[in-house]
Every structure is written in structure tokens, then in C-alpha cells.
Length: 134
Image (cartoon, rainbow, N blue to C red; front, side, top):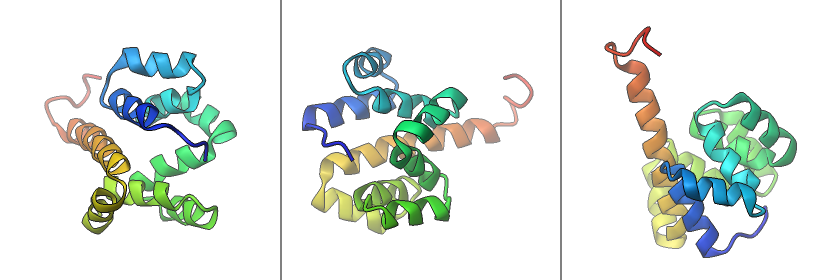
């Protein structure tokens, strides 16, 4: 995985939380994979396709957050242990979240932001008042 500075990981977290200006900045400044990750979190097909070709580890992390065991296994087998921990933590694994907060707080916060987005999506999908209106 490409090494990202602390500043870029913080920017990625902000873009995951919905800051479109920062997301667009990432896209234009040599970090398209991080900007497209944000789109893929919301099931954007073209972003998902791009990640599959150019940054499959990030797509595997998204799939891992969605509970796909094969994606988590792929991350582990390919040496993306930190991303596997982030995916598990964002999918409600409290032990992995605890580990991240103790050992790599920056990625722990990233996992929290991803979890918030995924929880919001799930809540919206389960809201009977929104069925048929999107």
C-alpha cells in the first residue's frame, strides 16, 4: 500500500465524513484512490470498477466492512493487515477497534468514520419512510 502522510490520512477521513472539497482535492492531487474510495463507499459503480483495477486493497477493505469474509482473507493474505483491522473495526469488531485506538489511532479514527457512513446507509435503507422515494 502506498505510504500516506498523517495529513493525507486525516484528509481522507474528512472526505469519508462528507467533505467534498477535501475529497476533490485528493482526487486532483495524486490521491484519486482515496477520493474514489469515498464514492465506492456509497456504491458508485464507476468508482468501484476503478478501485478494482487500480487499488484493489481499498475495494477489499470496503467489502470487508460489508462483512465479506473472502475480502478480509484477501487483505490478510496480501499483507494488508492494517486495512483488514480497519475493515473489521468499521464492521463493529470492538476488539479490532480497541487495537487500532491503542496502536494506530489515526486509522482507528478512519475506521470510526467509515463505520458512521455505513451505519447511516444501513439506517436509511431500513427507514420505512424512505422506501420507494429514492
